[in-house]
Image (cartoon, rainbow, N blue to C red; front, side, top):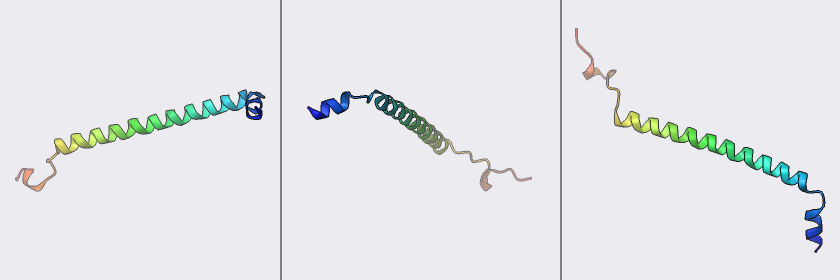
Length: 62
């Protein structure tokens, strides 16, 4: 009973602050996940199609 009274007394501001902070954390986490996915996708592309133009046996001899 006491816990219910404590939760109902003026904690709306705390709930809003918690919601805003939680949302901010989720947005930051989503940004990191997208960045990680893009890096891994690019890495997979580079491993699948390597650029061999700088390798010694691929250079033209003049």
